[in-house]
Image 1 (spheres, rainbow, N blue to C red):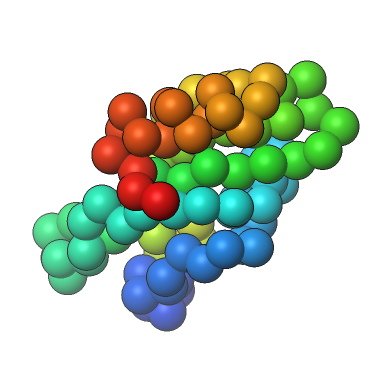
Image 2 (tube, rainbow, N blue to C red; image 1 turned 90 degrees about the horizontal axis):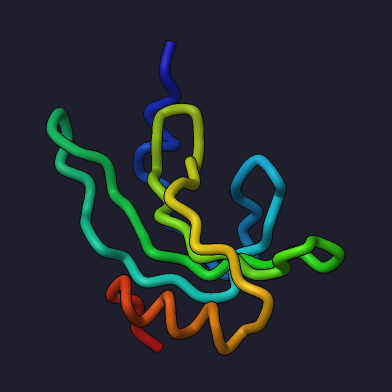
Length: 92
């Protein structure tokens, strides 16, 4: 049974996403949810100290099971992450 509430979640700064539990530090909503058609999704910069690549730019989707992160650009610096974020359509 899917959790309908997860479909309406809005990605927020500070949310933890991805299998590696990274924190969202910037996000831009790219598409709203279309009930029965598509999920809402964002481009996000996420961070986790202690990782080989501390920063990652992901597509994050609000799915029935919760936020799902995919298509990562892994970065060593915040400057690299901002460049990848902007190239994907992220906005400051």
